[in-house]
Length: 324
Ligand code: DGY
Image 1 (cartoon, protein in one colour):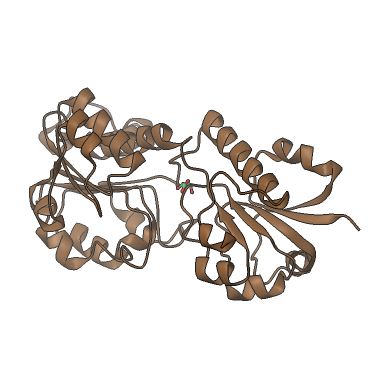
Image 2 (cartoon, rainbow, N blue to C red):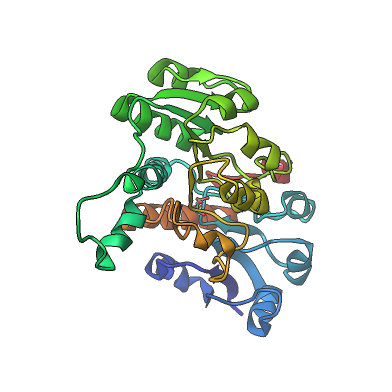
């Protein structure tokens, strides 16, 4: 019997065609992985999984006794229980190095949209409300020459700093686990502690990966530290922010607005209270979602999968300790 590969929420199906010669590739999309019977059955024979945001926990791993590799089609891998995978000898991989500029474009665009009220005023025009000159209460706020605070100065954070500093003459503050000398040199970025960044930034842009250290990093205390005129942008993961605290901060006008590409629960529930704020720009986790970049990510994910299944070390192995 041919070995099975599970493709989960994998859009560029043609990239997987090369695997058909040796493997039986089965596709799952929009299912509830813990409940879908066909998926649970496929796990029993699967040697590899390639896809986006599949929660890989102890339960799933127990159901997949032959699994060798989970190739994430994303740079974030917070969906993988790494210790559990490593314990069972299962490799995990991600897709860094191909999506940083694309993601920075999107997050900077969301920042601009929130500051200049682009989405809100687009609705205004489309709803036939543009009948006279704008009034003061429709004015927005400037981006250029303001202070951009970036929490998480990795590769994407640095690309956002580049856009802000070189394109919009922004002053860059950043907070990170480690210093980023390159960003300091190229974009004149100043390292500071989190509280200083929150107090001084006009735009607070959250770009950290989700880990046990960054879960709920931004909550009530942090929103209270931000300027009343500030805009909060989240391009990391929904769980880095306490959404209730964000809603309270918006309700109490502790911040001016927000731009959110990620949410605790995705897709976002249509009844979610965040949707009632006109000063919040919401996008459906679009960071890396361009044709060009998603295709590169899909190819890289398949490359990692193939290497792992061939017994080689995949290029983007996130748990190298599995090979020890
Ligand atoms: C990533 O690559 O982590 C993007 O957020 C898409 O999930």
